[in-house]
Length: 179
Image (cartoon, rainbow, N blue to C red; front, side, top):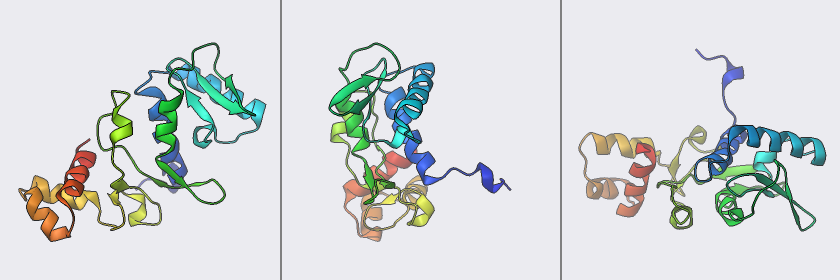
């Protein structure tokens, strides 16, 4: 049994999602990420910079937006990828206090800059539904259930009928679980 202190929280999951946005498509190196996080914590008194909506990346460095200015938190660099990080942050639903409550993970590859813009919001992770495991949005149906039946030989059409879902939702669940 894993000690309770080693479990990840939903906030940790959201931070990992944003870190993936910084690292995967843009290749920002981990030392620059660490330097930027420390800078932001120290200078702006932000406890968890990875979930702060003003945190942005350009492929080389990390930036924080303050009073309309974009501040390079990890050193010198360009601002070319500013919009891409916003696409990732838009997939996080927040409560009235700004805390993350839902995460719509990408179900398709995000290697190209255009992929995140077209990725549907069919799969959602919500800590108050199915213990935060990925489910079909609005239904609570775990995508693992769909995927396991698909791997066992059920067709997309059969699964769509059994779960009363569109075939496209079944396909997105399969893409997400297989990733």
